[in-house]
Amino acid sequence: MLAGAILDSSGTRILLARRARPVELAGLWELPGGKAEVGETDEEALRRELAEELGIAVGVEFELRDQVVLSDELVLIARWARVIAGEPTAREHQAVRWVDAEELSTLCDEGRLVPADTVWVPELVARLRRA
Ligand code: DCM
Image 1 (cartoon, rainbow, N blue to C red):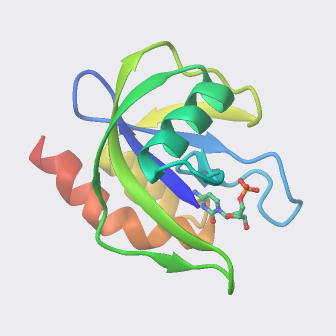
Image 2: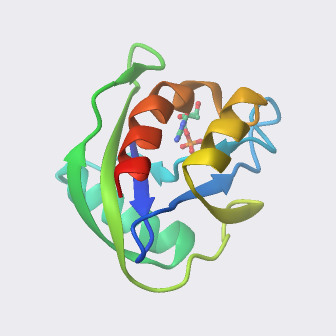
C-alpha cells in the first residue's frame, strides 16, 4: 500500500484527503494513495492512483522513514512526491486540502488523521519547516 506526501508548488504544504470509507475511518484525513497492481513498481502505482483519485500528475521521490504494518498482507509505505500538473479534486474522498506544518500538527493532535498516518507527522513537519 502506497501513500503520497505530496508537496505543493510553493514547497510549504502537503496534500491531505478526507476518507469517505470505511465507517471507522470516514471523516479522517490521510495521505492519499492506493495498492500496487501485479507488475507495477511502487512509483508507478502511486502515480496511477493519484491520477485516478485526485486527477493530478506527480513526480515521486524518496520513501519516508517509517513503514506501517496494517495486516499480514498490507504494509503502508509513504513516498515524498511533488505535483507536476493538475488541481487536486476529491473524486473518491470527501474533501482535499493543503496543510502547512502547523495545520498538520494540529490535525494530528486533535485525532483527525487516520491513525496509521500519524507515524509520518514528525518527519513531515520537520521537512515542511525546512522548506
Ligand atoms: N490506509 C491508511 N493510510 C493511508 C492509506 C490507507 O491507513 N494513507 C489504510 C486504510 C485501509 C487500508 O489502508 O485500512 C486500505 O486503504 P484503501 O481502502 O484506501 O484501499
